[in-house]
Amino acid sequence: MNHDAILETHEAFGEAIAIADPARIVDLCRYLKTEEKFVRLSAVTAVDWHPAEPRFEIVYQLHSIENNRRLRIKCRLSGDAPEIDSVFEVWRAADWYEREVFDMFGVKFRNHPNLVRILMPVDWEGYPLRKDYPVHGYKYDYSHES
Amino acid sequence: MSRILDDDHVATIPAPAVEPASPSAPRLMTLNMGPQHPSTHGVLRIMLELEGETIRKAVADIGFLHTGIEKECEQKTWQQVVTLTDRVDYLANLSNNLVYALAVEKLLQIEIPPRAQWMRVMLTELSRIQSHLVWLGTHALDIGAMTVFFYCFREREDILRIFEMFSGQRMMTSYIRIGGLALEPPRGWEKRVGTFIRAFGSKVDEYEDLLNSNPIWTRRTKGVGFIPLEEMIDLGVTGPMIRAAGLKWDIRKSEPYSSYEKFDFDVPCFIENDVFARYRVRLVEMRQSARIVTQALEGMPEGAWHADAPHVVLPDREKMKTQMEALIYHFKIVTEGFRVPAGEVYQAVESPRGEIAYYIVSDGTSKPYRVHMRTPSFGNLQALGVMLKDTLIADSIAALGSMDFVLGDTDR
Image (cartoon, rainbow over all chains, first blue to last red; front, side, top):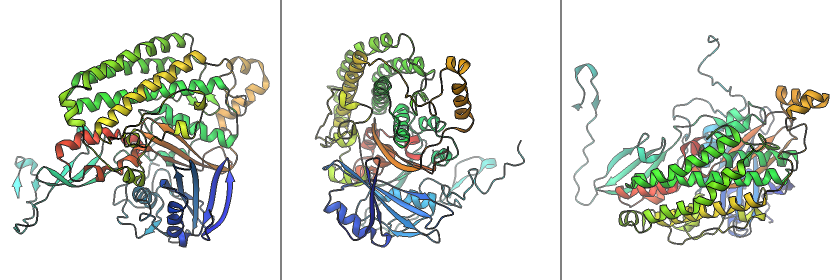
């Protein structure tokens, strides 16, 4: 595994983790799929490190059935209008996972075929899994209820 | 515009847009299926574009059962989250308990004694049988075979009674906790589990007698619901679906957890890749699970049922009354929970539906910083559009049922 988009690698609890350059994520993923046999994209998710900067971490869980290996790719994005390229053209599994990250964290995926909310209603305001989003939501005030 | 209700409750439905009549372009009709359709087993909405009886496009609309469990996990202490994991996949709650407990134990780096590990294996396998029984019963009911439903739920009831005996709960067991089990295994469990598992093999024979050579069942399931294997892998399909398509991949074998490597069992694999093959995979899995339960019953190690980790596991009632340290630990665990060292883990297990994996991030406090649940139903449902394209609408019921999705698992 040797690709210049990988900025840093380490291992924790026997799991391989690589920090990658968000600008080259599609390149890297295509390389990992074809050369390193990571044929499965198990999940895409995000972690919000608010108020730290870079605020968001996009996490890709890769799995190679042939080599029985797992790899976690992480890309760090700024909290100000976070955007990253979609990996949909590499694995179609990314479709719903990226929509979920968009829905929950408000991270935009460029070149995604259908980037709309998936779990929340389409007219929902705000991104529920962000750390600055209150657990009861913004819209309703429960303070008058005892 | 047409009126469909009386004057007081006027509801109008817009007239369909008139398409220009063209002899070459097919006339497509959009049909809404769900979210309350009985064959969707929950609240799944599918938009179908039909040309006559043939589905040209199917788009799934999920999220009707979204309850924000991942957000709620961030508000609860580590041990409290176990009760939320039950509610993710309410048919495989022990698999969810197990994957969460394994992930947090990895972060805490505590060793689980063999008895607790074996007990976990035995109960998750019973839970797998129970989940497959619900699938088989309801799927047969969808296709029109009612008897199978009653047979399956008869056996499922026995398993739920065993769960009740262990944990006090039939479905939301929360029995597998961080550090071991919730309670000491009850007196007489060997007899109850043994009686059930000895009789179970003949019960599976009964289901096979009812279905294997049943002409309606075979004609409605054979050759239906095909998805090419490459597309399945690309779309993130896991579990019995992918084993029915010729890929022999089971996380219990490839990445053994909770001492699965000590058990002797086979992984079924069929190449037909249709609804009937998925049915056969699940039947073989039930028999293999019964084998695992029998082995666990015979070789159950003696010893402690929880880890020796007083800062995580609640002390015995007896010790609490006699020892100062036990009382202090009890007070601290109950009032503020325990702290988990900062770090991140990804733990995958094989649930009845496929790969269930939790990605957990800790910032060193007594609550999880982030819990992401990679659920098998969510991954499997992505293949719905591919599976239903260019099939008959009547086959869609059998094809949908064969995916065995749980909407709580999809929407979380």
